[in-house]
Image 1: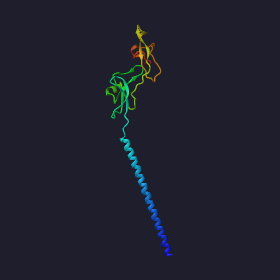
Image 2: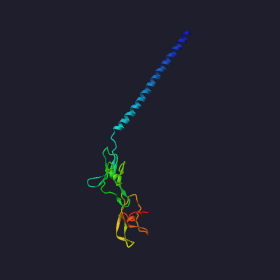
Image 3: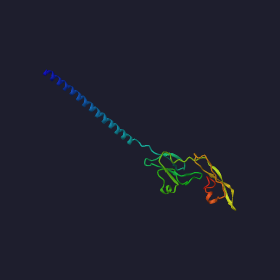
Length: 184
């Protein structure tokens, strides 16, 4: 009987040792797998950080005054270019399309605009159209012999021409020639 108990304790001890050894082995494998996962994530982040950054593309005015899309320098995070006003066109033709920020004074005056996505400074001008000009003679408006060319964006399909009403004044209501809607 004593021998049987000793034998049972011995078998339990061996089984506990085997289970403990397996458990330790499993824990060690789990620890190694977790470390490998962390290492893989760290290497992925490092690879992405070291990978060549995508450069911003902007429309740029070349030496020949032609405007085309081009890759910017890595430091450039903005595109800039002239502002287009519906019916009158580009506000300041001296402002070039470029990579980088606007000159502060031109940005403040509203003549230059900045943006931060690929080719965002492109202006898609639409088809021009013409509106009659008016002259005021002896308190009566008459159609002038000249017409004003009106400019619009490609997305704009409507045309608008000003025509004199009973309360119209030349200076207040017929700015920019006859292009656009009447000013209330």
